[in-house]
Image (cartoon, rainbow, N blue to C red; front, top):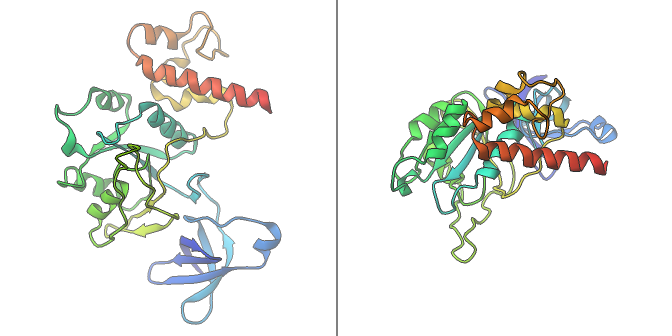
Length: 290
């Protein structure tokens, strides 16, 4: 048996990369009986056959799993937005951050198209730095921040996420010249990006890391977790959550809430707090339906 990582799944075949060889594999029959899914990013055991083909016999335990995009064992999510064209949607950014935190994946915020910034970096970006998030500012056009992005991707499995049209494929082409991933122009009529990535594939980088170029999307459902956990996916809120009068405080309408007091004093950004309230409402609504 050899052990490797599934880097692509297409038309019933699974492409597994070990240190030296890429194996084209089918699944062992038991997977059809148990209906166990094999995802890109899974570490698997392969029984080799002839000419670099083989059969996947076992999927090793996953550290984490994303539903959209379907990928496993991710170290970090590079959540990419553009400085403009399209303008950044901070509510959507918060949604991506909660998704990453909820999956146990380190989020990295990447503001691309820095060449279009006219008055320096926006104030909201520094606010996320102050919270403690890793923030990169890049431009695929003039190579701003590309070296820092390469370092962030070094020896990690990373997934790029964010709306269409923000330049994810262009960034990957800049990080790894020669990939020649398809890039799309912004629709002048709609102001949105065209989808240019059709499936999930882990791409080996020169640094030794693996990165997934995934389809862009403009909306995202929150992961499944109890409402009580949500505050811990907002690090700046979690800092105050233990100081509330009631242990069961949801930081919504309860009296003597340390989180609400921190918002009032300007220690927590009110827009971020409103994102928390919006997500809390969504979770409660989902719980009522089920």
